Amino acid sequence: MTYAITQTCCADATCVAVCPVNCIHPTPQERAFGSTEMLHVDPRACIDCGACADACPVDAIIPVDRLTGPQKAYAEINAAYYDGTPAPGPAAGSPNFHAWDRPSFERALPADFRPLRVAVVGTGPAGMYTAQDLLLHTNAQVTLIDRLPVAGGLVRYGVAPDHPATKKIGDTFARFHDHPRVRMLLGLRVGEQVSAEELAAHHDAVVYAVGASADRRLGIPGEDRTGSVSATDFVAWYNGHPDVAPDAIDLSAERVVVVGNGNVALDVARILVGDPGRLAGTDIADHALRALRASAVREVVLLGRRGPEDAACTRPELLALTQLPGVRLVIDDHDPRAGAAIDSAAPGELASLLREVPREKVDWSRTPGEGRRIVLRFHSAPREIVGDGGTAPDGRVSAVRVSGTGGAAGSDGDVLLRASMVLRAIGYRGTPVPGLPFDEATGTVPHERGRVTGLPGTYVVGWIKRGSSGGIGANRTCAAETVGTLIADAIEGTLPRPTTPVKAFARLARRRAPQVVDARGMAAIDRTERALGDSDGRPRTKLTTIGDLVTAARRRTTR
Image (cartoon, rainbow, N blue to C red; front, side, top):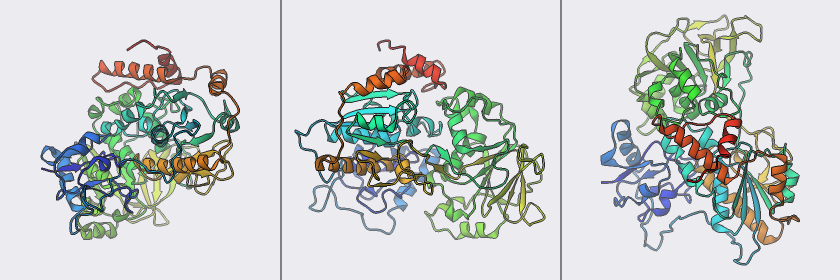
């Protein structure tokens, strides 16, 4: 028997570290790592020891003989990665084997080096991998800061609720919340309640892990009409983010057009037309679950500018979409290039997963039929979001004008897709960080290996550093690079030393933000949400307002 890595793989390479026979690839030393969508177990080399499954933080590694239903495909996916190739590396114990345990740094701080004070702004995966490296490899005192009164970032507010295993990475990060060298200051807004200059003055170094919170714009007429929504807001809405009101999303549309076919677009489509009953046992926001149960949405159209061979999603997410219970998946057969690309795709290529998906020419002037379905329409770029007020810019969405052939063609040869809701899901974008330089073209902070240009002692990590690319695990190597640069700067003596006492910043933060939440408060929020969820058979019921989170944090009863 061998093991297989399945859909929820986070690619942080913890499994690689514990494998005694080097049978999991690509490893962080290999070129494909960082660009691969998931890691793979070589069935020829696996010795069935189970070490990788024990170490996996998201329960993605399963014995092949225990795979059921749609998961069975992952036995082939893992094996296909190695088809026609020699075993990719030497076994443990051989002269050429180099185990990868955790990020290594070219230089290490001497044991007697003075304790560094480092602030990490952001408690999502990038920030927590940074904190982990600092705590495990240096004697640093770490201040964890987040603008929300609860930790988690993208794990809490970005992962789809029907991917509960992926959210388990949060438990790994949570073990550092009450570390003796960690101070948590949640609900503190850097740039508003404290400045970047004040933060830097109280610490040897500041690492910004603030992510990419904005969405990319389409840049077409009608984009701001009522019913045109960013996927960023929709994902935040169903995950209970305090920034998005419970009534912000209107699901009265029968047909929804989603622009994009990346993983976020597929998440959105799956949530919109999937069975709400399957979400009842997850941590989806209560208001979202109620709205989905009453939803009128019966059809979601996923628009791709290019062909199926260039779809932006990963194989696991597309495979899940082809096997969604109670939902038909079809391909709009308006352009022969899409079908040709699917038919000619080699086994293992993304487009090959669509070979059994039915194709039909859709009449977009008609309302959706009975049942629920997802339509993949390739080679279609949105030209305009049309409203029911004609050319008036403030009317409600009534259709999307797209390039392509087939359907109800306009005078210019474009196609009019009748729909009353549009979701743009073409990527996330970073926003300027007060006090830091910003590159408008890339939506990132200019840096050199994580060191912010022109600001000694200031660093970036995650999406604000590299753009919105890579999943949770990609932040581990990204954090290692930034921490390595920080350590090198400390050894060189280029970090500006703080002149204030250790506790001075915490006092400043509490004066400016009296409702700031510490580690005990975070633990109280976690207990409250889990207790609320227990009564409904859910992992947790999220508190979705700043007030409720702060109130729960004040309930510091003993466990």
